Structure formats: structure tokens, C-alpha cells
Image (cartoon, rainbow, N blue to C red; front, side, top):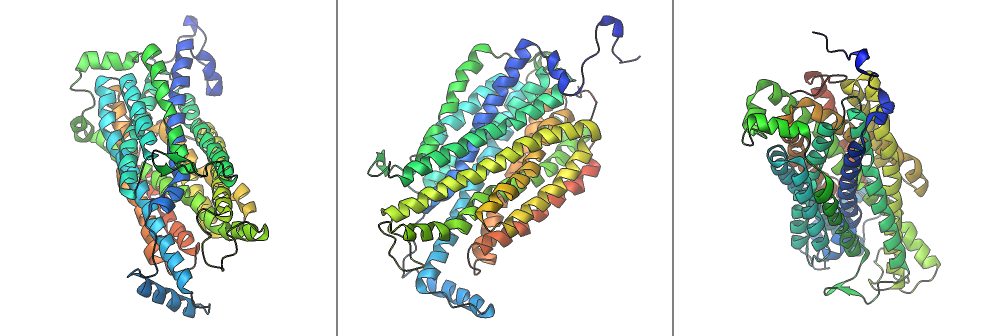
Length: 521
């Protein structure tokens, strides 16, 4: 029996981007709400990326001159300097290097806790999405990440910060699978890959808004707008305000409650098989076909997730390292209060000079994030277009290779402000395009009763394993390459980590091609 459309029953479905003309008003509404949910989710993620180092710089204990680790650390720095025919570090330089290592460690721990929460929440909410509905799951996950993002602003030490980031991650992890499967089940087949591409591309909006917020708060900090102000007993700083902004996504819950309904495909699947048989990990991993798709998708996700969260999202930190001496020189040239300290010493924390440096760091970290996500926006659309012609697997192969090459380029050769405006967008283009591919490809691997569970398994179990990525980068930075002058430890750590993109290439031959095929049932 032929499955070709009957021309006598009406016009043939449109292809490509023209397929959007076939969407009903409700389908447009679902697309917009899902995009908004993901935008706000990504706003939270990017606020964390931009606020992470300033938060750790404030919350990590200061290295004192009598720290027991200093003699051994300074001796190792001196040995490395002798090997490279450089002057031996001063005691203040050794202390500053050890402080930077502690901050780098704390930053990567915070990222790992966030990703662990993301993975745990994603796995649990993936099952909930198949059993109890995409809409209910989406609503609950948004509430979770909004509440605990706001509480992150109240952190008094690193332990509290890690805890709130883990709990925020629970909600963040559930949104992707809930929204992607809601879209995949609601969109007509001809428009589905393009709608999912738009969904993932829209993440750049949330990321760019976070960058603009960081830049604005950095400017206010530089002007002294927060001087003497407190937030529940803690100094009011840009990073705390950024997390307060993250509460806003909770307002979206009201819209979801009032207007969204569960897709017909999901309701039909649950009616036939029952709630208990939906979202079954025993079926997902017990059936040879679905197990192969799940494990292959998991490995494919590892490349992109570790590449992004374990390497690329530390590019604002690299930019801060590269440019900090310039900011300090500018403060001295302007004669700002507190800038008359010897070279190698930090400006007094409350001085005009320190506020200037902090403000410039926040502003240019925002610029770095902004141009990265502008590149990502174009890259995700490019992937959606490219995969429509060549297929899912060839598109992944091309973008994995170029993501690795562009990331290595940034970490080894970004040395000036000008480099930010061409290197970072190229890296964002290829790296974030992979995530557009995940949004399109993962729902195509699983039947309706397992779609949320399978998609979440690939994306979030991958993230559970990928939580080791920031930890590995931190150890490479603070241990393996720690004796090099900043920012060389971060450069070589990033370059070493780029080998992760090969993992995705190795698994592609074992995965199915799903281009132009209906969703499995």
C-alpha cells in the first residue's frame, strides 16, 4: 500500500521553511511557548556562566601569606620559570596564582554540581513527561529553576552556591526534553525539523539577554551604583542581581497552565498502553533497537555537552585573564583611587580602581558571550538547513570536526580584544549548532511512549557523565598546567579537552539516518 499523499485530497504538504505556512494557530502558539520556556532556561544557564567566576572570587576563601600550600606551590612556579628562563615569581605573584587556582577549581565544581542536577532532573522529568504529560512536566521544571536561581543570589559560601546550583539544575534539566517532545508531537511532519531548529536557535535570545544584563550591571558597578547596598546581609554585587533576574521565568507558568494542552499523540499512546507502560526505562534499555538508539545518542550528546560546558563556556574566563592587565593599566593611567599599589598586587576591594576592573570584566565577559551566541543563532539555523539536504549523520560529522577546530583556535590564539569579535562567533557557530542537531535528531529516534524518556536519556545521562568535563578542565588548569603563567593553564587545558569531539565522530556509523522518515510509533 502506498503511503504517498493523495493529490486529490488537497495540496501536497510544503517542504523546507515553507512548511511553516501549514501550521495552525495553536501549533504556532505551542512553538512560541516552548521557545519562551527554552529561552528563559538558557537565560538562567548563561547568567550562571557569566556570574560564576565573580561569585567564586567573592565566596572562595582568600589565600593568606602563611597558607601551608604556598611554599611548595611557589617552588614549582620557580622551577618552571627557571626552565623557561623567566624571572622567578615574587611571593605576591605566587599567592595570586594559588588564589586563581582555587577560584578555577571552585568554578568548575559549581559547574559540575549544576550539570549533575541537570542530569538527575532531566532523567526523572523525562519519565514524568511520558507518563503524566509534556505540559505538566514543563510547568514544574520552570518553577523549579526559577525559584532556586533566585535563591542562588543569597549564597554566603561555596557550599550554599553548589547546593542551589544543583537544585536549579533539576529544573533546567527537565525543560529540554519536555519542550522538545511537546513540539515533536504537536508539529506536522513536514515542519517538525524546522520548528525544532527554530526552537533551539531561539536559545540564543535568552543567552544574549543574559549577556546584555551582565554588561549593564557591570557598567553600573563601575559607576559605583551598588556601593553600600546589601541583599539580605550580603554586599549587593552584579552576580547576585543576575540571579535575582532569573526568577522571572516562573511567570511563564501561568500561560502554560491556562492555554497549553497535551498533544493528541501522547494521549493516544497512553490510552492504548497505560501510564505505567509509558516512560519505561526497562523497555528503553531492554529492547535492542531502542537501547542502541539511546546509547548511541548518549555518546553523541557527550561530545557537544562536554565541548560546550567543559570548554567553550569558559571562554569568558579566558577573556578576563587575557584582558585583566589592560584594565589595571587603564585604572593606573586614569589615576583612580587605589591604583597606586605595586605591580602584582590586587587593588583594594572597595577602591575605585577595583570597581573599574570588576566592571570592565563583567562588561567584556558580556560582549564575549553576546558574540558567541550571535554566532550560535546563525549556526543552529545553518545546521537545520544543511541537515535537510545531506541528512542528520553527515551534518553532525561536519559540525563536530569544525567545532573542535574552532574551539582549539580560540583557546590557543585569543590574545586581544579584537580576536573576540571573529574567533568567538566562529566557535559559537559550530559548537551550538550541534545542539540544534540534538533537538531535531533525538525525538526522531524513539516512539511516542518513550520519546521524552529517550530524548532525556541521551541529553541528560550524557550530561551526568559530562559533569566530569568541567572537573577535568579545572584539574588540568589548577594541577597539570598550574605552574604556567596565567592564562596559559586555561589555554592548554582547553586545547587538551578538544579531543572530546572525536567521540561523536566515532559513534555516528552506529546510529540510524532519520531524514525524511516518520517518527517511530
